[in-house]
Image (cartoon, rainbow, N blue to C red):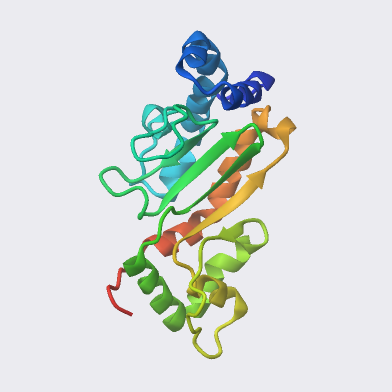
Length: 224
């Protein structure tokens, strides 16, 4: 059962940020396991039921959803071998994690956040979403407006994309997106170090479920 992160969690993220080398990591592997990986696995286990309710197709097993701390440096100019942050990624197995809908929680020495979305641009899906906004704006707003003030809508946008005449501001802000994520920041370290963090995230995912399920059913359109 998740008991909260600790001061040692955030101290580790800060330490690996300034000592990003294999010797330091291997010498402090027990610190990493105790303060970072273990509580992340415990949190993933506590969130599993909420994630399954939101989408039973998403992977919920803790050993599968906790990120690796090792960075893939093969094609990166930054050769630091380790990340100074971690995350839980609830994704549908077998699909491209960057272009399919999924939920997440991430944490670093600066705080944490959680939400869901599509990591990279996926034009056929976003074409489908734009078509749905044009023909079913009310249906979309019925699931977006109840959570709009609690979660931030983020993502890159097309700068010159025309929005259909008469579309509301709330729908139009989705229409021009290339991809998106709906996120809540968690800057309260007292909450992050409390078992109540799991309850906060469970409640957030419960509120997001109607929006997530609506967006999951969007059909892809190659050309809009």
